[in-house]
Length: 180
Image (tube, rainbow, N blue to C red; front, side, top):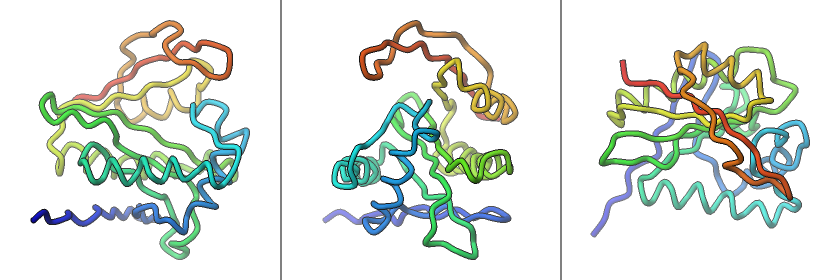
């Protein structure tokens, strides 16, 4: 008999980081079909039904304990998703993982992702006892690079044409943060 570990809710001064639910599918689709959100995100959907793949990925990670993905909501409106952030591809043997995130454009520049990622980092290093976190960022995504650097991530290099989007290959810059 297996017991399921409860999803690790997180709360910051202004935000609730909660589990993404099936009823959030329309909001996830609205974000992951928004041209400004997906410009540098690498995942996009052309229908709400297709977005089910993303929700299934969240569940699969949780069940296999290879990742956690949170909906970012204000504490006053926990049903409304402002963005999302997560830890994925957790490598339990090497104690490392990747991080990812997106935020709806109406909320850019307000310090939301910085505040939420600080909570995510505490969870990764304190609760999961990870040693290293990595972020893969497209070179044109200056705001994201500045964000992770402000959080202490260091630039480690660029992998040329490592990702494919549509009919083009993209370079990715790699940033990493080691446990304090």
